[in-house]
Length: 161
Image 1 (cartoon, rainbow, N blue to C red):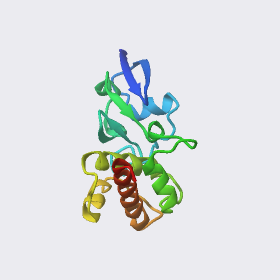
Image 2 (image 1 turned 90 degrees about the horizontal axis):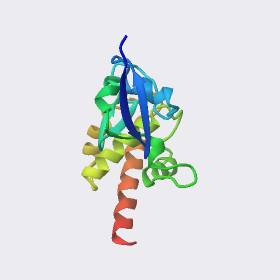
Image 3 (image 1 turned 45 degrees about the vertical axis):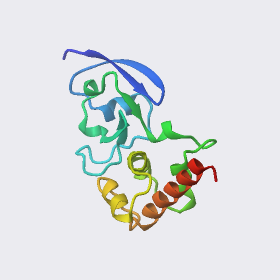
């Protein structure tokens, strides 16, 4: 099978990868060591593989890697790390919104996209934004609370409080 060289900008790092045209972005991200992008259903149903592609949340299992050529890709790990977590990651921990953790990276990425476009979402808007992310451990209550907490903290930081 013929390969194509693509350039992927992932979490501030640039990768040039030769790959066949049928490789998904999920497969390539995992091959490159981005294990925070989870392989759940491979059908776009669970959201465990969600990443930001040029600022928009997408299920990386539904995107062919060549379609992301030259795009900015951000995974949960690209938002922050244990030493310097992003406010959303911190809010998830503080609100107890993490149980098994499998869905968490996709949830956080979806929350980031929501809060970037709507810094003061309602509960219904939060639920809509994470509707593509399945969690089998929780009833989503703590996840919604975490996103509201992150929104409050981001607003307070913006106001200098």
